[in-house]
Length: 104
Image 1 (cartoon, one colour):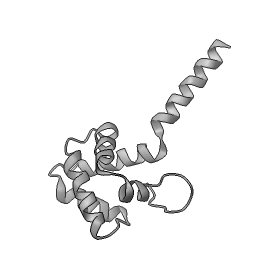
Image 2 (tube, helix red, strand yellow):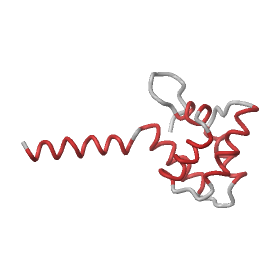
Image 3 (tube, helix red, strand yellow):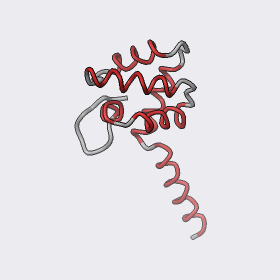
Image 4 (cartoon, one colour):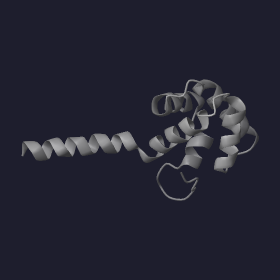
């Protein structure tokens, strides 16, 4: 995962630093199946009010301080990766194209 701040597409940096708390919770639950999504999202929002989260290490430290589950960090990073890359959208598009090819 890159925290690249360049380009026109959604970046992990932008998602972590500018996405609303409710949307972060939804992303963490939907794509990471994270049980402590609300607490982690709250901690991220609280920290970024003080200082933008600029590195993956800073984000990992926030998650580790917030969750007792050592796998939370992995689930949150997975959720961010899926959201930034629109992985489910890509799968949906590919499936539609495959069906169209089969029908034609």
